[in-house]
Amino acid sequence: MGPPAGQAQEPALPAPTGKVVLTVSGNISKTNRGNLAVFDDDMLGALPRIHLETTTVVTDGVKRFDGFLMRDLLAYVGADGGTVTAIALNDYVIDIPMEDFSRFDVLVATSMDGTRLLPSDKGPLWIVYPRDDHQELQDIRYDYRWVWQLIELDVR
Ligand SMILES: Nc1nc2c(c(=O)[nH]1)N[C@H]1C(S)=C(S)[C@@H](COP(=O)(O)O)O[C@H]1N2
Ligand SMILES: [Mo]
Image (cartoon, rainbow, N blue to C red; front, side):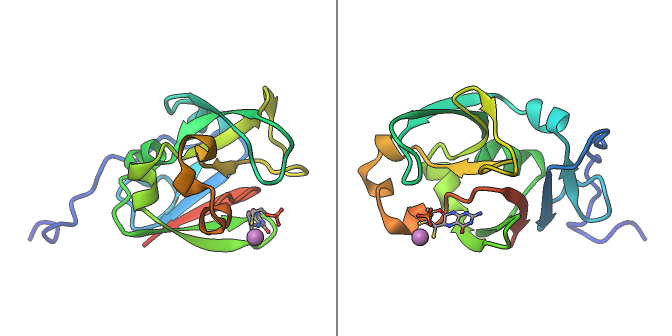
């Protein structure tokens, strides 16, 4: 017998060589460590680079964020589901509907105003919504989803 229908193995992702900064788990078809997709800075840097400028509820004035689109990351790991659970270094956990990432250009930011985000201050990664471009996003429901110190995404 061949592999069960629908369980065809996708090509594996490259393996990280540096420190792992992001882990993607759950319903993904591309992996590089057991059932997980783990990323170091170089691997994240290979995703298309995007920037956006927006105010935030926790900083003053307009900030420039550089990073990659959440939907590009999710496509890269072959994510299939309705919800992404974002998990932070400080144990903050929140469910985000996957449709946010098709409806809006949601960024996973690696730097703010040209400086790499560090775990001591909102890093290594910060989920950033294009808040100033959409009135709908200027709402507490979305503020919850701006997870800083992001370290893991679980797709369900
Ligand atoms: N890692 C992490 N991200 C987080 C939070 C948190 O506690 N930890 N709080 C969330 C909430 S509840 C809101 S409203 C916004 C802004 O948080 P603050 O107003 O408590 O600073 O960040 C979100 N991102
Ligand atoms: Mo909040």
